[in-house]
Length: 328
Image (cartoon, rainbow, N blue to C red; front, side, top):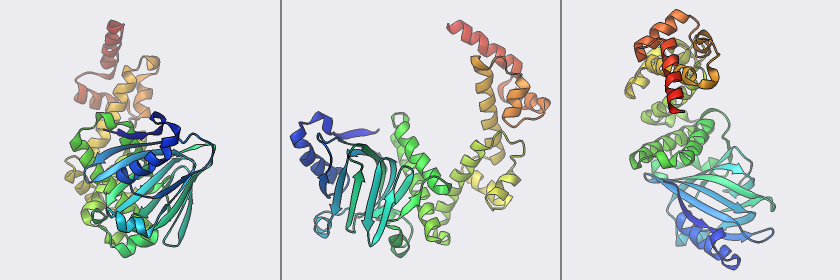
C-alpha cells in the first residue's frame, strides 16, 4: 500500500519547513533544505515497501537541498536512489556531474556522496517518483555505477521507458497489490534498473544472467502487447527484433512458466473478447475486430476463439449483450 507519511497541508504554515526536513530525513535521506517562492510551503511524501527497496511519491514547492559530508557521517543507509521526474524542473550536481531534468527524465544518485539539488519553478509544485534500493542489491561494480551518479538517464525509450512505466504503474495499482506482489515487483524494478545502468555504462556483459533474462522477458512482453495487431507477430519475428535466437526466446518464456505463442494467443483473444462485449462496438463487424488483433483469416479466428471459450464469436457477443441488458 502507498502510505502518506507527510502532507504539509495538515500542518500550520509556520511548522511545515521544519517538519518536512525531519520527516524527509527519516523516510528518505537527510538534507539541508531551503524552500523558495511564495508561502505557504506545499510538500507531501507517500511511500510503499517493495521488499528491501522502497518506492516514494514526493511532491514539493520550489526548494534547494544539500547533502553534506557531515550529514552522511551522521546517517547513511547506503542507498542508491533512482528518481523519475513527473512534473517541474530539477537540477543536481554529484561527483562533479551536473544534470538538468524535466518530466520523463531518470536520475541516479548515491546517498553516500554529497550532492546539491534544486527544484522549481517557484510557481509550480514539482513531483517525482523515487526508487530507493540498498547498494548491495545492485549487481554491478561500484566503479561502473559511480560515473552515472548525477547524470540524466532517458526514461522515454528502451529499458528506461519500461522502468518508468513499471514505477508509475506501481503507484497507480498499489491498492490491488499483496505484500508478495510488491516484493516480486520490487525485484523486477531492481532488475530493470540494473539493465538500464549497464546499458548506459555500456557494460551489459557484467549483468548476472538472471537479471538479463528477467529484464528481457519484461521488454519482450511489452513488445508483444504493443504489436498484437500485427499478423506477422511470431516467435521468429520477436526473436529477430530483440537480436536473440528463437531457441533462447522460448527458454526465457519457459522459465516464466509459459510459452511465447500462448502469451500472444491469450492476449489477442482477451482483446477480442473485450471488444465483442463492448456495447459501443456492437456495429463493428466481427471480422474487423479479429483483424484488429492479428487474425486476418476469419476461419482461424473462429476456430481459436471457440477452442478458448467454447463459443463462436457471434455467440459470445450475443451472450454479452443479453447479460448487459439483464443488468440494466
